[in-house]
Structures are given as C-alpha cells and as structure tokens.
Image (cartoon, rainbow, N blue to C red):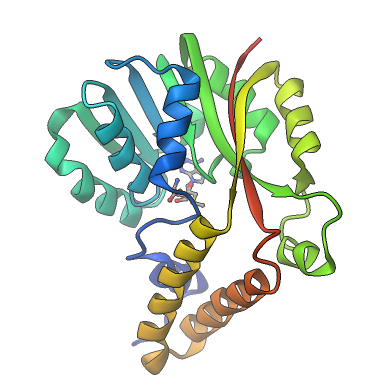
Length: 241
Ligand SMILES: C[S@@+](CC[C@H](N)C(=O)[O-])C[C@H]1O[C@@H](n2cnc3c(N)ncnc32)[C@H](O)[C@@H]1O
C-alpha cells in the first residue's frame, strides 16, 4: 500500500467494521421502549457511522421516518448501502449533527455525543426535539473504585466521569433521566473481536502511518483486555425538563 496520511490510515483501520463503537441491537430496542418513541415517529441517528443502529432503528420501528447524519463520507456511503433496502423512509446524509433541525421523537447518538460534550450536545439537541421527544446517548463511564487499568484505558479521554458525573451533565443541560443501563462486556468484546480481525487482515502489508494506526488500535484492545469487566458506556434516555 502507498504511504497514507494519519487520517487516511485511521479510516482504513476503522472502515469495514460492523459498527464503529460498542453497542447491541437490544440497546436500541430498549431505548425506543423507554423513550416511548411512537410507531410512526421521526427518528434521527446522529453520528451514525456505517449505520449499524440506523438499520436496527428501521427494523424496530417499521413505520417510522428515519434520518441519519454522519460527517465522514466513507461511513455515509456504507450506511446508505446498508439502509437502501428500507427505501425512502430511511435517509442517510453527510453532515454535522450540530446542524440538525428535526423535529424528532427520538434523537439517538451512540458513542457520538461526546464529540460535542454531553451538556452542549443535549442543549443543542433540544431545539430538534418534537414535543414529548427524547434523546438516547451512550457515554464513557467509570464504575465505582476504578482500577489503574480502567483509568489507563480512558487516559486519552480525560473528561470521563462516573455515572453521577454523567447525570450531573444531563441535569446541567436541563434534562431529566427516563432510564439508563450499562453497555459492558459482550458489546465491547464483539467490537474488539471485529477490530482484531481487521488488524490481522491489514497487518501483513502495512507500513508507515497505517502501521502506526494498527499499533494504536491494537494497544487499545490490549488496554481493554486488562480490565474488560470495568470498561463501560452508560446508555441514558433523557428528556427536557
Ligand atoms: C464512535 S463512532 C459511533 C458510530 C455509530 N453510532 C456506532 O455506534 O457504530 C462516532 C461517530 O460520530 C461521528 N461524528 C462525530 N462528530 C460528528 C458531527 N459533528 N456530525 C456528524 N457526525 C459526527 C464520527 O464520524 C463517528 O462516525
């Protein structure tokens, strides 16, 4: 492979994965239920990546209008391909989730809200919600008494807090919790198993930036393996006060 930029190398490693962060279809189904999203509601998948959850949203709410927005063109193309069987009721476009207008009954953001910060993202999302609408998001979460290995895993995300800290950021945005649950164990294992396969496939011909990106991805997996029962996202469903 020719020399690539660090950004291109990152995208090479993270393309062709089933999803771009830990999560399961059951998490989506749970959030739709807790949020009370109407059968024929309007749903936004913000930061949809390659569209794994967009597909689940479409299957779980077969009469809903679903939009998905993603900033990276490569992921947009993958998500559009995956969602094509649903026809016009599922629309995936390239764009900035800060610009969405709605109104939506559910704003779903798996592993994506943290790019803007939970409080800021929720504040901005408020104007895009329909009356009675809700936001579901997953956010890095420290469990009580985290080990040194758990803290090392999150060392590149210094904003990480425990569940109490996430709840405080939700309250600061003027939202209340409708429900929460941990994303821990199996979803992370599935995510890192697919990433390991991707690394193994790319490794033989990798050099330069791509080799660096593979090393970094592998180091992340090693850090997760040192504390798999402690690495969690908190999935929250919240609504404006
Ligand atoms: C950790 S990935 C999760 C992707 C997907 N939700 C999933 O769970 O597989 C976060 C995604 O959010 C996208 N993203 C981050 N900031 C964004 C923004 N301002 N507008 C649109 N997409 C954004 C990233 O490009 C990335 O694909």
